Length: 321
Figure 1 (spheres, rainbow, N blue to C red):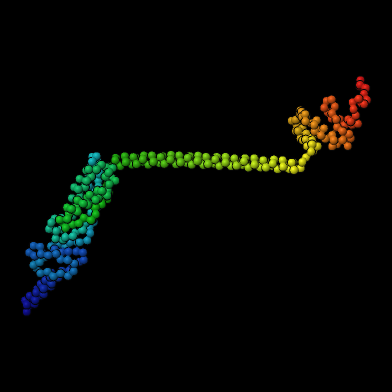
Figure 2 (cartoon, rainbow, N blue to C red):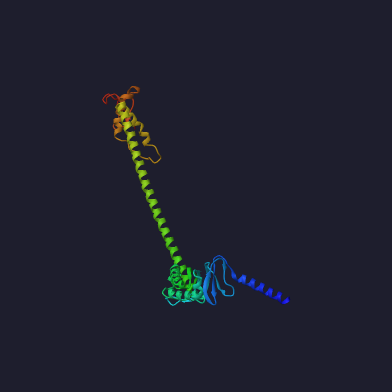
């Protein structure tokens, strides 16, 4: 009985192994290559799959998701004979599991070498300054070459990124000095432009202020002149409306004489010739208060009883010793 039990146990184990090998579960976004006696038979997709045990075998399981592969820095010579180190990152995706398995031995290594050679060809036609400022152009050119070359391998290159471009240390120092000088130059230009604009605005402001001030003074002078003219016109109209006689005018003239002599600086002043006419005009107005006003030989007015008597009737005064 013991040999029979051993045989049964062996059969059970074989059946269990056969079931395991028969039922193949493939995860989502994955694929498996099935070979029968070493020859490609089919590609297993995601889900439950049945294969013939001990006859069919799974050669390779491939992830169909997008993959990211960073490559180490590669030295590249530019057109102006400068060596720069460039780090690249490749985003790729397997679209054909069979081609990725049988068309190339190691598609990762093949993509890396193709990236290095293509990058050297592209950078070799650019100088350092263009290399540093043309990342998008380099990425597009590199992606086009890689996508065309890897299509037959069942690989699609979605994106290519230049992670870093590092020129030599001496070149970096020179670039920093140049950038610093350019920034200082732009700062000086902006400062000069600001000062110039400020001076222009200040001059424009002073010009507008002077114009407005002159216009204000002109309007004020015009208003003053108009006011004075109106005042003179009003006084003139009032005088004509009052119809003053010669006596009133003579009296007003005499009232202005004390104002002429006012002030400490007036040491000498001349009596105008019109004063005689003014006094003659007043003689009739104040004659009732002490006799008429007359003038002597010197032109000085005298008041008294002798003012109205003729010169023949005056009593001669004896001369004083």
